[in-house]
Length: 431
Image 1 (cartoon, rainbow, N blue to C red):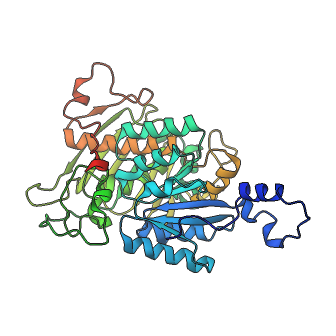
Image 2 (cartoon, rainbow, N blue to C red):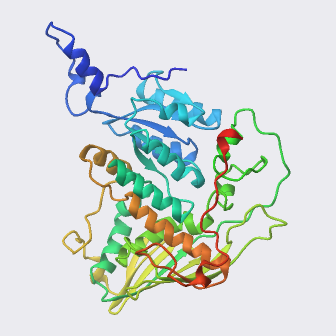
């Protein structure tokens, strides 16, 4: 297993040049913006469908990036990813790891791309940041508290961190938020978001762990559970709260972000959350997140956001009209077609031009050392909003929240009572 890259990085190239006294005639491929010394080197953790189909595939097509290593707790996934990389580069140089710690110990990686289940997102990001690497990580976080820890770590290390969410770069959601935020529909009054349901999965009998799977590493910081056949399938683990938050945190991480950007509350959060939802029968199902849900968020600026299960949809309603996008990256409509012809928002106060695809944005930010569009704070604020929705459903109470302090208001015992705010981690390394 080849764990070291054979490509020439900047440090090796300069060191080599300093030790040679004779003039060199270098091939043209070693010069210019895409020379090996200028390429960003990447390692990947989590090589499932999102890890390979979206993230690895996209980064492999970026001329200024080089993939050196892939890692997955399942050997078959790891080998499939290696084959993708070697086929792209027409060599056999890609290193493979089943234990991410071995990959993070490499000194020749500039960035790490994380596409694991949600419960690993922040722990892996923190570990990668502490080895001096920049991080691109899939959404969302698993808890509010760990999200703030991540934001602080990124700031402390002056690192580049990008959440793997595409919505801010998609023209339909960028314009939708821009129309709402810039006053094209008057004063914004409410946002109506609809997210597709996820089914509940029945309990299963304990089964032998597959030979190619490191089950302990898959569980990581989550509570121990015996292996069952479909527990690691992406549709199943997304419905188990030890690993994810179901449709609310999965689809919500897309459309609720657009909602908060349009409401100009993307750097804050709601002040009050209430809602209802149906939880699966724990005697019958391994899934334990809401199957259906109806949430009401109130923001300090007076905007109401309503989030419910249904088809993918988002609609902004203002004092002078409305705008809507029905379906994922779907069909625009508005109270007036004049609204849909407004194309520019970059000059509006506190709204940014549409960024490139998130992978390109990450690489450009690594070079400039500027924040990407979907930086650590943005993802933390979004995830916090979604986690608060879960709290409201599970507690059956109206949750009051101070987004500035990221805490329940002083003396508000109702909001804090019976709510799981921070889940203790399992010592997976000694298990």
